[in-house]
Length: 278
Image (cartoon, rainbow, N blue to C red; front, side):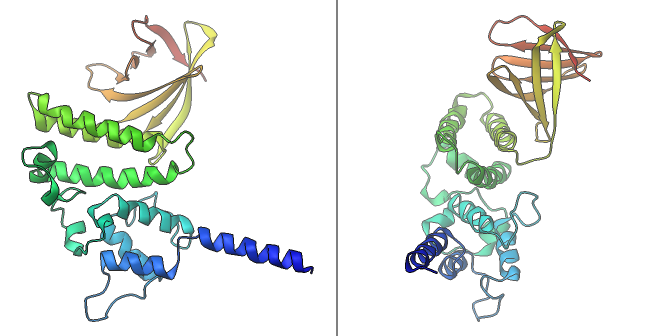
């Protein structure tokens, strides 16, 4: 083997190792935050499968379908994203009860302004639980969005937070916040395929083969769908209705009713009469 090839292989190996997050130093840094030992040196070997199981438990993600294989580098990326999405990212030492005992939201309540929306969430156990769930879902979405071009997840999340904080204008602030969290969680789960899905289902509209809508249904809460018509895409949420099943998006809707599907697409558009394509 030539000297040039040897050097090339060594350089390539170095690049691969540099890109790997699953290193002893990373394992140690995670353990300093989540503390898998009892303080007397008793606990799983850091970096072992048992240790990784404990880490998943402390983050509240053990058993979730979207957790990567523990032997993969994706697992380390997944855990790293979850930790960064919590107050633990600041490097403070936290007890496991902070993660598991459902005491508060994903952020540090000691640092929020009194009277702010975040302070209200801190005082409400149900809203705190929704905030923690959104934190986990966002971390999972961040992994899927790592190669997104252009990157939009962080910008969208900042926009969502501003919208959430506008709930102070609502007559029922608590109900507004619950809806905002539930819809954002469902939106991320659908957009980044984090939950089971059904489809695609194709609808032919107004008897025109060229007028077709493709739909994926997602088992979120509330249920959602993502519909595509030409180059246009719409996320819709299931709505309460007295008859059939109805989904509503920003300017689109889909209503399956008495064996027929009515679809509107675009602001002020007329309903199209559609049928599922066999």
